[in-house]
Length: 355
Length: 267
Image (cartoon, rainbow over all chains, first blue to last red; front, side):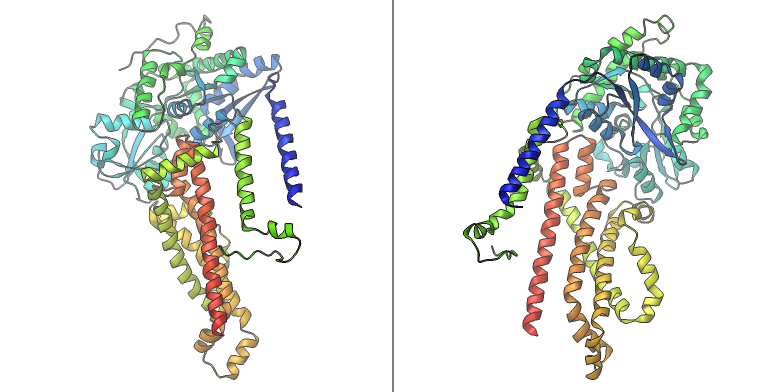
């Protein structure tokens, strides 16, 4: 191939690409809504989170979308890197909605990816501090100067910062080893870290005799739990507000079902779909001072507002984000407001103040 | 700059122009142009595909803050330690495999099975065994180099042992003399090639390992940036990984050429 031939080929390829791109820009009628969901490989089957399962079992959303000729596609993301994968999906427009963490959402919006909190709430997983089985450490104060495994940028980083601060410590007083949860568990088992800050997988480590839990967030304010809630891509919300309303309403229906004490056992069962044993799910939710119903509250109350205000400040100070962000721009409350006009739902949840 | 290009020196004028070393820059520049064009097209979100100039600026600020050197030196230290120990062990085991049939019977099957296991597949087991510190990364680098060098050494020794060893026997050379004067000089070139392949593999597996579990290093810099959605830093890491891998390969090629020239001069 001569040089001129090469240049011509390059030019041709560029023309074709730009033509294809111009074609893609015209807004097509909506055929499918894509919601990211965490997928777990579970004994050869693909498992999902309890929230997705409740929504799926309800069937209301699929039926409503079908009436409008719209499909529903669950886009799987790996539990090892939910935040980055969802943010990348939002950035390149491959997903429209995702139920995921608060800190990754703050990172996305500070980087210029516009998303909005559509429905607050979610199970509010507890956070745990695990040390090796033979460790003498009894509290985080004993871990000053020690190595702690923590996956940075994940939604449990903020609760960890609160735990440090409440004990008069800062990030500079410990040595953080940035490891994903799987590597963190292995590092704890091999003794190459002195502690591991994580979610309910802590019980698995305790059950295997590898680690022991020296602290959990059950007796703390709900702000110490990991928040994961429904976020939507702003461009999609602006373009299809009616479809967004359906998604929001479906999530509130699911939250309403989950929040009822009568469905608690069934919810536990659905939570095992992620591959976590029922005994762990039961322990995760046992002995918790946060009322069961509140875990699913979709209200943009003072508690939620303060949480995001403080977390944005934390992220900026800790260098997790590199631009200022007004937390109030993250909320799009109209969909929850509309959904809660339903008499069956109105007044079900009461607003909380921050504690 | 002396470059030996496999192009005819004589020929029409334009052919000589095309042989100019400046044309080595064509493909990198074309890649840069495509990258910039993709950014301009707006098809990919600017948060995901950062324009080249901004990546360059990020690289400069990372270099100025010292972050880059910290991570780079951590990675290169692991590579150096792993490479040296992998090469020494690889030469030893390779020489034994190439000369001792009994060693082949004892160790050969295990050697060949372990050789098939990709380094990255060993990560979970190695973390449990050695922890997430330096040791397991150095072992992975060493493993990548060891098998390439050992294989090249044993095969090349076996390849020369035919007619040349008959000559050696004729001269009544001892086994050590045969190894020293016949097998080793003859296998220099393939062994150096084995080292080069090993070094390339080691670099790739090291960066991949640092992505999974590390406190520092080029791979860790990229992983942390991905979590914080700083795609410019991720791209600095990608470009640097490629450039360093290329530089290491070129460097070893140069060493290889110099050693072979010296060997040629002696003979």
